[in-house]
Length: 529
Image (cartoon, rainbow, N blue to C red; front, side, top):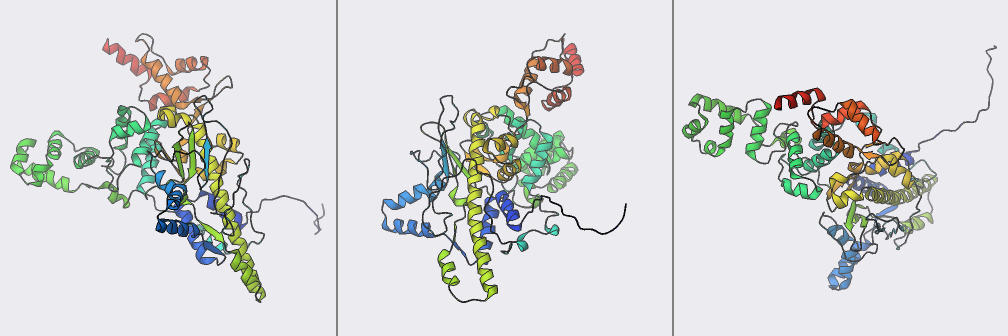
């Protein structure tokens, strides 16, 4: 083989991620707070962009006149966000689309939402000339924003460097959610735990009533209390306490110092506050020296565990999607207009400045900024349409949860949504991250609704993992003492019913339910007899 230089022609294909495409992907996964900051930066840097304040001026003028126009503006835009902000909102009586992006789907007669026509009404949020422009969303449109032909536009410097992606501050909510994923394997318990985490105040105390949580999620109060006991063992110690006494008791229990004397000491904090140490020693059954030691240990505890972790638990959640029940049945879903950036391309300024004489560098700069402004407006519109489409399908799939409660969560994965709306799984993953929906049952992150499933051996509809766990518990509760069911026997029974499940999965579910092994159950039942 001769080693000589030569020229060859080869044809190949490759995917090139332009800076605009990278920014488009980044734009989709931003939260509404991060998106607002990004748009503010673009408004400062790009002279071809302007804020759309025409609607605000119209609202102020109507309010000054005191006529019906102000009420109509409130009901159509800002009022829609205000009325749909809470979980108890029923919304306006009409079922037509609001001025913002919205969807209606009615009842198909079987209790679930019908497919129906997707009605998307857009106001002048994303028009280029400030004039209202109705746009019909393409039913099969994927996330393919129209990008400018020029690679320039000032976006390269906005991409984070490697040194900016190595680490980030972990909030207390992130810390608790990580522990929740490791400690609780049951999807219903995780949903309850996530609800309780989002209900903590800035000091780490749980001020919401557990009965209200059970009513919101339509589950038993006893189950909420059981989940709360798990959460109270999380780090930092004392988190999820409902009062100061419980907070101190949890921290002492974590140190293995909650003996009867110390428990009595904590139960009588009013005597500690009044410094009635003699009465306190009598109640606790200890001497004055022990009281001094107990008081010193009490001072070493943290009455506000969340502040010790690093301040506020999290920023107040502003939902991206608003959801309410329609009077005629089904659900009305709309984007929160308060979270949608209102920007326009200033075509008038571009036309005016294009007619003036300028150098080649200036003309290139103006063209690049104009293309970047058009790209941003189109990308914001595509982002809003994609979020609404994904949220609509999630509500359709989890309709039983919104109607009947947390026990009726369906098994759902990203692929299920992606296949239906004709998008890639990664797009659905980006949409559901840091996006929240305000529903009649509360505010939830969109990714909460994705749960695991167990396939059927006959190829039919998959079983929910929760349903399988309930069957395992029911079979074990009904087993006779002389015929304790082993994990292999449970697998055999489940497979006979069409459940394609492995023995290790049954063992994992049994342990997650807190049920001992067959050997331990047989021993316990023999001793009880």
